Image 1 (cartoon, rainbow, N blue to C red):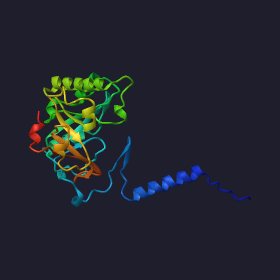
Image 2 (cartoon, rainbow, N blue to C red; image 1 turned 90 degrees about the horizontal axis):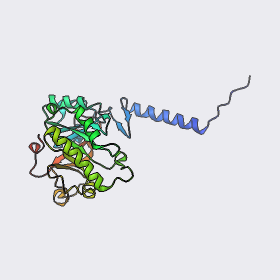
Image 3 (cartoon, helix red, strand yellow; image 1 turned 180 degrees about the vertical axis):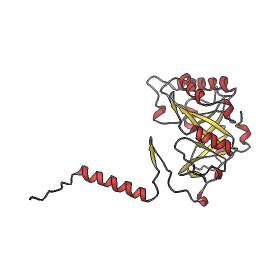
Image 4 (cartoon, helix red, strand yellow; image 1 turned 30 degrees about the horizontal axis):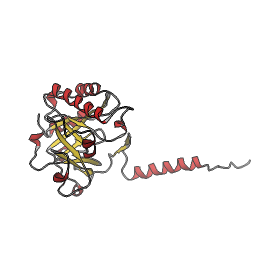
Length: 254
């Protein structure tokens, strides 16, 4: 009988390397990970409490998994409710109810895209977020991403009006304009310094700039200073935020 010969093709080798890599990850505690979009939801080892951050507040989405909400130390929590015109965050109610049990003031946010109308997107948000369930004004998340790639012919002025329309719908429904989360670049590009007098601002900048509040062109109430910090009670990284000088949670309340 002739012996069979194993042919080690590049595809076979690559497959074996992938299997080996997964085995290593599993052995190191990634036993409950799951890949969601472009980010990994880590539900393996708990962070060392000595390495944990103590931010004024945190913002969460389905990427964040808690292992013990009783350990969560924050003055406020924002939770993503919706994205675009049809995506509903599957962990919104889980995080919302946990924050309520911990008696942490909670708000909901919408991740804005340029793919569908402001009216359709606000309808999605309003279908999920009950006014009675939130203590903080809604938040509108505007950031550079693949989801914000504007359609052809969509000008910066169009973007300004697009955001303003969502804010007007929010004000009509919830009785207050939203807090807008964005960057200095987009704030300047879309001329948000004009026409948003009834909104407050939440700026993202991770560069650890000394005296940032004085140097920032956005008159912000909140500053997201990192998206790569550990917070006790959660697996993996959590977005961390601090108040501007002279601001506190009362400035966020409805």
